[in-house]
Figure 1 (spheres, rainbow, N blue to C red):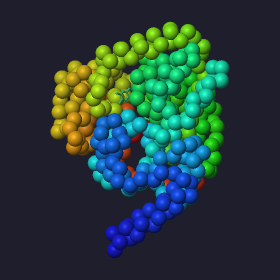
Figure 2: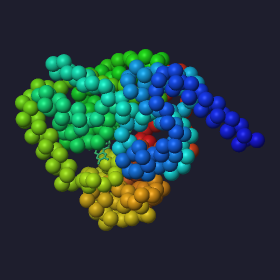
Figure 3: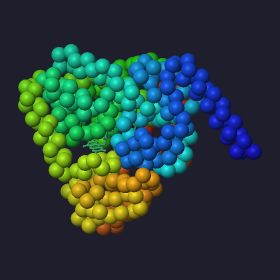
Figure 4: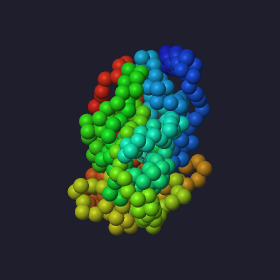
Length: 332
Ligand SMILES: Cc1cc2nc3c(=O)[nH]c(=O)nc-3n(C[C@H](O)[C@H](O)[C@H](O)COP(=O)(O)OP(=O)(O)OC[C@H]3O[C@@H](n4cnc5c(N)ncnc54)[C@H](O)[C@@H]3O)c2cc1C
């Protein structure tokens, strides 16, 4: 009986979703898997993937989804997400098509959330604007970078963010960057908040000097991190209680190269878990990550916190019937 009710509920949701997509002229697809949409190349089936092209469209969609009580999650390039192998019965709002056009006005740069962060770094460097050249090697979209407060080599996106455009009640609303808490790989944006774009303030500098600093950051990255592998960057945050970085800590425990099925602790950087093979499984990556956490806890007394976001099929996103803020859990 319960199964029949569940199927009816999903049928109803599917019809509502098809209507919303048709009304707003947005692409809605079935049959996609997280393995196609994330850089770790693992993860199970997704009920629906909706891909808006513009900020206005994205704002309208989430409003309609909220009104209809349909659960959704935003995804950029999927370079910081480990989705499990189960069937994910919710909507993924894929934002990598929402690129827009970068607008430069003096030292202010406006960009949409779906725009590539590495591309933006190149654009502004060419325009003689400095402040994000350290971020040039971070894969992903601007929206993902804002959500995580992405950072590297002395630069963090939050420190240059003047305003963020968010979706509220179907509209594009601008909020000052100063009202957001930009912490280490974590921000105070509320669960269910969709980031549409941002205006960042940079500093004029010589394009050649900016490029050289960006090249320097990239070569340091190439020398210390695996490239061409399927990873999600650093799996764990650095622990405040430790004087050394998490990668070094895992390396010193002799775990480089350790394998669990299709997942391996990178031999190049021990805080990177990489996956191999066509049928790689999220459960292998997760089991390996948990093995690392247990050993670090036992041997160092330190509780490692995930930097990568863990998306569990059993943990469906909350449905919000309005656009009010919900507090967001720390970490995952
Ligand atoms: C090789 C490699 C190196 C990396 N190096 C670094 C590094 O040096 N520094 C660093 O900080 N990170 C690093 N990362 C991690 C990752 O690239 C960044 O966190 C990046 O900013 C994520 O962007 P994304 O578009 O892929 O986000 P996703 O992985 O798609 O999403 C990440 C989170 O952001 C949310 N999100 C995405 N877009 C939106 C939106 N528009 N509105 C609301 N929420 C949104 C998602 O729901 C999810 O919770 C690295 C990753 C890889 C693979």
